[in-house]
Every structure is written in C-alpha cells, then in structure tokens.
Image 1 (cartoon, rainbow, N blue to C red):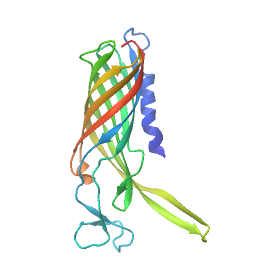
Image 2 (cartoon, rainbow, N blue to C red):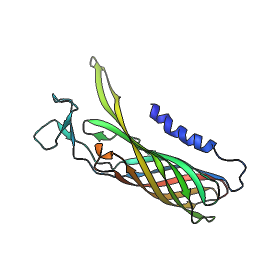
Image 3 (tube, helix red, strand yellow):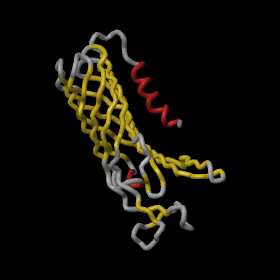
Image 4 (cartoon, helix red, strand yellow):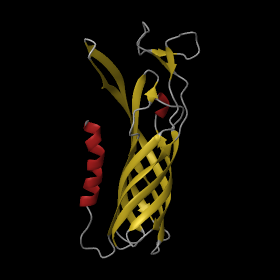
Length: 222
C-alpha cells in the first residue's frame, strides 16, 4: 500500500518545483505503457508442499516441489513528468511498474523502476522533438504470497500477503521522439536502458532494455 503512493508523490514534487518566471518554461505530464526484458537467473523456489517450503532449490534436479523463477517480460504502466527550463534543457522523473503480480515460482511479484533524469532535446520543433534523458534511480521487486481460507463451505477468500522486497540502485538512459497531435497533446515512443546493480539476485543480468509509448499533455511553450 505504501509503495502505491510514494512514487506518484515524487512526480507531484517535481511538478511543483517549476520556476514561474521563465518565459521558456514548460511542463509535460504523461502516462505510458510498454515492457521491459531480462532473462531468468535459473534458480528455483520450493512451493508450500515441500518440507523446504519457500526455500531455494535447483530446477530439474528431481525436486518435484521446485518451481523455476521467471524471466522478466511483462506489461508495464508508467507515470512521468518533465520540466523544460528552455526549449532544449530540462529535468524530469518517471516510474514504471507491472500493474498485475506475475508468478515468481510459488510467489507473486511486482517490478518497479523509478528514476530522476536530466533531459536534452537536440531537435525541438512545433510538431515534434527528440528527447534524450539520463539519470539515476532505483529498481524494486516486491514479493507476495496468496493465502486462501474458508469459513465452512459457504465463504472462501483469497488474500495477497506481502512478504518482502528487494531494492537496487539503477542508472537509466532513454531516447524518445515526441510527436504533437495538437498544440499540446503528444505521443512519444521511447526506448530505455536500465543498468540495475545486483539485479542477478532476481533475474539473469543487470542490463534491462525497455520500450514505452507515452501519451501526454504539454503545458506552456514547446
């Protein structure tokens, strides 16, 4: 629950910091969708039926309760805001996350990336601009388990219980082409790269390519 409000709040803080006196200043607010990809680390977790329940195991080793951990290839949603101090230079913040909880062996997980970036726009025209950004942030993998219970035979419920998370430092770079549909509405396909330290604890490597399509509104000049 706490994570749901922390990252959008960071974007609000960024928006509130816009300087009011600069004639070239503009703000872009956007929502995006896309994906990120990295392979499985080849490890496994025993399910609740094992005497080693939720302990580490080796897939295909003869342990019938061992469930392999997955690759990351899920659908992501994103929220972002950028402030341009001039036509070419600005800064921003964004967060992307899996809205569902895919399986991680016998567990469920949610992957989140968040970052704070400096922005350079080498080409900025009325109908399009090229956006290059780079910065730092974090990657958070939160884990949960589904628990089911019944009262008699009439009422049964399933609850998702958080059991922990892993957080890592990340470096982020991205390149996008922002196309203005109107004077203020835009669509921006963007390619991103995340380098996440110690991400091999959850997946196969630290390099995580990603792609998003952002839809947003630009306030002010552009």
